[in-house]
Amino acid sequence: MQNITDTSLSRRSFIGALGASTALTVLPGCVTTPATGSGPAAAEALLDDIAWNLLRHEPTRATSLAVDTGVHAALRSQLGAAGPEAQDAKAATLRADLGRVRAFPKDGLDPATRTSFEVVESAYATALEGMALPYGDIPVGSWRTAPYAVIQNVGAYIDLPRFLDSDHPISDEYDAEAYIARLEEMPGVLAGELEKISSARQMGVVPPDFLVDRALDQMERQLADAMSGGSLVESLVRRTREEGIAGDWETRANSVVTGQIAPALEAQLAELRIQRGLAGSAPGMNAQPEGEEWYRWSLQSSTTTSMSPAEIHQLGRDTLASIDAEMDPILRSLGYTQGTPGQRMIELSQDERFKFAEGDPGRAEIMSFLEERIDWIRGQMPRAFARVVDPAVQVKRIPPNEELGAPTAYGGAPAVDGSRPGTFWINLRDTDLHRTYDLVTLTHHEAIPGHVWEGEYSNQLPLIRAILAFNAFSEGWALYAEQLADELGAYDDNPAWRLGYLQAAAYRAVRLVVDTGLHAQGWGRQQAIDYFHTNTGVGVAETTNEIDRYCSWPGQATGYMVGKLEILRQRERARAAMGGNYDLRTFNQAVVEGGNAPLDVLAGNVSRYIATAG
Image (tube, rainbow, N blue to C red; front, side, top):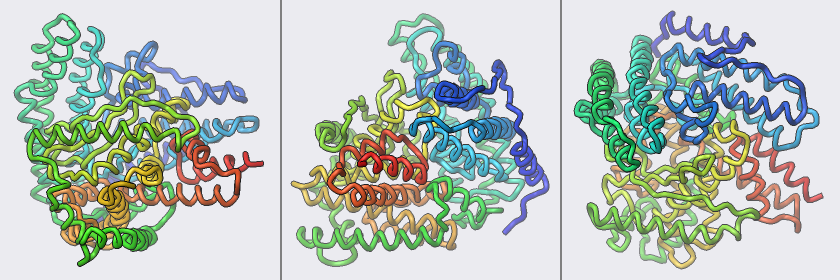
């Protein structure tokens, strides 16, 4: 294992010194006054103040939540910085606000407000521990743990074009000017990232060669697009035209994109090419400087537990064995009798009955199929929740420029103010990625009652709760949503669809095995691909994408099954303790209304729910 340079240790010591400080960071144009007093009103004011302190560091989140309005409208013109100094400034703000949360008197606060304080404390403490690591892109209440700040699925070159097209609104001249202002900030963001990855390289941190190859391919595509103006210009021109907003937006945007953004992308591309010349093939964090510590933190961040890699690895193997036992009789009833359930699912995947057509006709079939399943599951929600919401859901294709390094699908909650619907993003680079039996469960995971549904409840909580999300809860809930759909009869009339649900569960169990195998047990990339493919029956192309994702987001994939199993454990605890007073609808309500939370905070919310039985 290589040693970290004195420079990186000095930076780590500086972050640690920030931890001892209680001074507030004063951001440009913002003076933060500590909340005073006690009681519910003061608690609400403090939580709100903390939320805006974080959003000033991350203004794109304010736009995604649609709260960059009124006195906070200036955030719509900003992106936020991305270099090491920006992370140090954010760490100072987090440390100061964590101190305020811990010092606030909790007596007399209602359970929901206490939960909010517990959530902030957990998120900020975990983020600060991550920021004390000498490299990486550290999330604050988010799901992406990224040791490499620019790689095939991490970086502004991917995130910002999608954000500007999908989340940045264009409804008037102010919005269009804000778009231009953000384009003008983008070179600085790219430069900040470049500083981070070049500094990490000097410490000996170089991503594995296969990840760099994928990043090079995608960045070359993005650069070619930017050199001609491309999607960043097209989005603004198209939407200003649709809204009838006068102005020479094309000329202005094109000047920034081709003259400033493209050169910044070229500089990142040059650094990646340097890294490619140094890269080895070892896929895991245990091959990186201080990688064992980095992986321990990423597991803690992703699972909100202190489980060790060995414990998670064994949990994955045990859970997979249990799921295989459920799949076997269904497969036998369909005539598939030889090999592991995963191997038999490979055979099933070749059945023409479950395939979509190739090309655009198949893409249209997929979109229609997803819309129909969303309509069906929406109608079942009164059977599963005591208070039903009605979130708008749009199904959108992941932009083609991003599809190569993107997951099969992902989902996001509606905007807080309802101005933007929840989104179910689907990867359609190749229709052979999907089968009818796996898209059903994917719908429940990403849309209803999964990410979009849960996010609608979280959006009703204080702003800081809509900002902070915990991987184990977010993904654990979405996986629990898959089982809930099964319990509501989603697969009763179609055994193959139920196999798709069980295959998805096996998929998440296998993730526990391969993620820890890659990062803690010395597995090679091909070993992980082979294990995943054999035990899930997922195609090699998707399997390879998944394994590469685990290499660039270590630990993230472990949150799904760990979170689901904990929600189920809490459900059984409530059922046993409440007896005849137990109701599935009120249990589910208690979980989603408690909001996105670390698993120990979730347990406390369930304890309060149990106490309502008297």
